[in-house]
Image 1 (cartoon, helix red, strand yellow):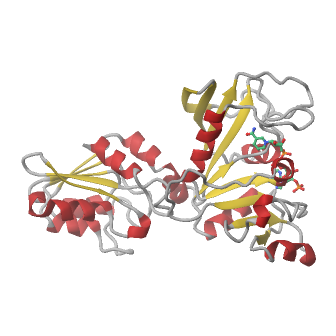
Image 2 (tube, helix red, strand yellow; image 1 turned 60 degrees about the vertical axis):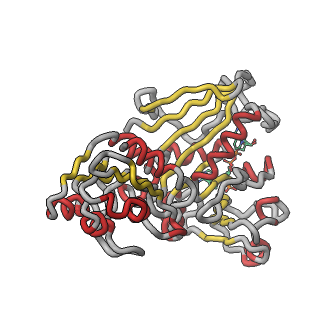
Image 3 (cartoon, helix red, strand yellow; image 1 turned 90 degrees about the vertical axis):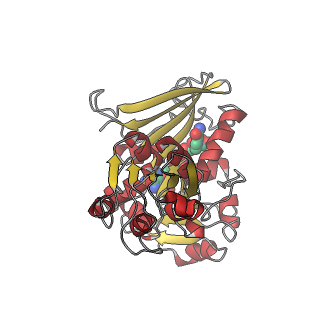
Amino acid sequence: MTARALTLAMKGVGRVSPSPLVGCVILSESEEVVGEGTYIYSEVTHAEIIALAQAGERARGGTAYVSLEPHTHHGRTPPCTEALINAGVRRVVCPIEDPNPLVSGKGFERLREEGIEVVTGLLQDEAERLNEKFFCWHRNRRPFVHLKSAISLDGKIATASGDSKWITSETSRAAGRALRHEYDVILVGAGTVMADDPSLTDRSGNERGRPLVRVILDTGLRTDPWAQIVTSGRSEPTIIFTASSDAKRISLFEDVGVEVVRVEGGPRDLASVLDALRERQLTSVLVEGGAAVAGSFLDARLIDKFTFFIAPVVIGGVSSRSSIGGKGAESIAASVKLKDVSVSESGPDILVTGYPAT
Ligand SMILES: NC(=O)c1ccc[n+]([C@@H]2O[C@H](COP(=O)([O-])OP(=O)(O)OC[C@H]3O[C@@H](n4cnc5c(N)ncnc54)[C@H](OP(=O)(O)O)[C@@H]3O)[C@@H](O)[C@H]2O)c1
């Protein structure tokens, strides 16, 4: 049933930020499923409350399976702990504590105070992965950063002439675009905007809680004001981080609805860029390149997750662009090692994801 609570939580993907994904199942005393709930930010009501309302009196003496620790503070809704207590639930099974210092451990404590049995630890790793963005947000006090790259077998993202369309298959490109639905922000460098003129939108067709925010890192504001990402700035939120204070150039972008944010140290100061995104309550960033930007994030050790779509194509050439630029590791020992690596097929390509081991 804990697995079922995690599956229910996943129904909220793209619709809960800046809150966590939460699912809940209520089992009656006779072990029958009597209530199920999924949290959706815009609908306000928490998963536990939805499930308890379905269960009604049948929750009494039963068990609540919740994917994340029920909260005990008054936020947008009254505490879920009190609702579980009042419903007469006898046992709460929940994999993991909430990382939010406002609630961490306190929900379990409150339930135990009332004599409710609390069982934790089951599917803990899965529950943490499910809410990896939310955990990063509270533990590191910054958005979760996921680098996605589509590369050739020899690790290139473009030929020496800059041709990059298309290295991977349509299946992989669609999977890459689908990833955007899970993120608050999609981020690229000025080089990618100049080379590809991408639109960087969420075309998954799935409902989002908040619109996807497009971010360009551009020190001198050299982005073409006629680029698709700029001209669509009124309908899709777009931010350019820059070091430029050229008022005339800035107004070219602001006049079409693009927000221009001046960073003191320029957009190479990624900590300040992430701080500014945090201030806007944006909890997760999908970095879609190009090489220079990916390299800066890697050098700063600011990548929380890697995804590579690897095509059975060999480009070769010393001048053709590798997927990750920047300084790189000085020794193999100092390179970023990945853990929890998963490898699968994506049409004719290979999909590899992993997390930095340290
Ligand atoms: N296969 C893929 O998955 C994929 C994805 C994206 C792009 N691409 C390809 O990658 C190529 C573009 O790569 P690129 O390296 O030129 O582009 P990029 O990384 O998108 O942009 C690099 C530029 O961004 C600016 N910048 C601002 N802040 C930065 C920071 N913190 N770190 C690094 N750069 C920063 C710099 O220009 P200023 O100094 O002027 O600010 C820099 O020259 C294109 O050929 C594109 O097709 C491939």
